[in-house]
Image 1: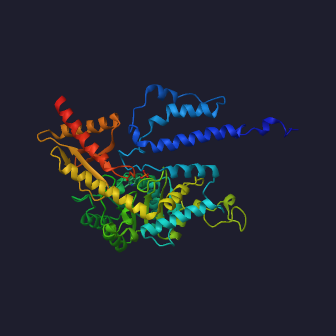
Image 2 (image 1 turned 180 degrees about the vertical axis):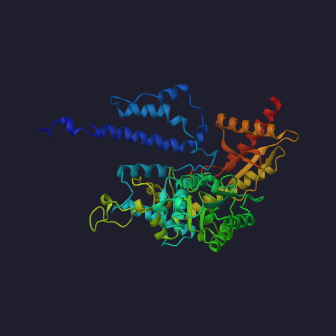
Image 3 (image 1 turned 30 degrees about the vertical axis):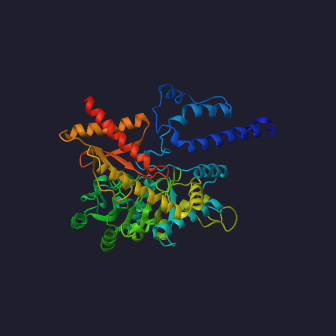
Length: 489
Ligand SMILES: Cc1ncc(COP(=O)(O)O)c(C=O)c1O
């Protein structure tokens, strides 16, 4: 018979000395607050030395180490080689820079450590609260449904799954092979690649994603969209969804959402909006007109970790019809069945609204940041970023050696160093070198994209730490590097 009092059965991960842990924990907290506070004192980014990569490529640890030792290794090998998006001059891709409050919220969420999935515990109500606030922001009815996700990619996938399963109620049971035609979905050529992932994952196939060309403002061509839908219908395809962009990833273009909503309604299609970052200016009265139609969508995907500056990772999706949302994902398993009382009694069942069962408490950081800052402050910050984009665009336009490559409808500026007479290939190579040198020097981190065949420097401003002078530094450095590279050519 086993002796349950033997020490080996009482082993735990908890510290043997809580006071020692407290001391290390306080030191970590102080260090991390300083890390965030001193973001602007560091280089934006620095290369990872080979020795650090070696230190991060070892066999599984066999024996215990002290927390202090582990923390030392983190400080030496991890912390200095971050992406850099806490820095005021990080404008790459569409990365938010997080906040100290978000960091603290993550700590508290982690201490509670719930799986935010089903049952009767407050974290589920916090998520509901955050979603209800978001409905208010995007003009969705309170009756609509939603779920937080790791980001807009998953949010888009959940929305398109809901649209697909709504199109034919048998799809969940019989798959898409039993449809009497091929499903097709409509996006603009500027739509984010995660929507291609969605149709690939959902068995629709990227061939059946109709990438409709855009106009000179990078907005979807409505005439071509309408033609394509009619042609597809005539050819026996099964159109099921139109996706509109509230802010394209390349340039921040906003499609004509109201017209897209009307076409979807007329044609009996689901209307989804990818509003990953670009739906956020819905907060601003000056964007009411341009973002008209957001509130008409059947679903919208969005992020908090981009333009709400919440720490990674958290996005979400809203689905107008709660029944449709549930019907897309609900499965009733014996071991998860609802009870009238106890831990499993609650009605908030996120397990029925997405594909994950276990989920972290990512709502807490959004809840805390929105409560602490208030929506008026967010209005000012989002407006500030848009004004910074205009300031940068004006500086580019006023500079003979720089060229603005796309309109700036929001917070993204695409430009390049330009020299009359240089071939397209040389200009591309020159601008790519400028971006790489900006990164390597640690001065600034814009990213890049290709616009009409031209490699461009792309500045996406979802940064609450950037100041006017940061953009002046960027312009000066691009000019300096461009001239230097021309002279050494
Ligand atoms: C327009 C758009 N949609 C979707 C995404 C994907 O979002 P996430 O990175 O949160 O998955 C992005 C990311 O930048 C985006 O800009």
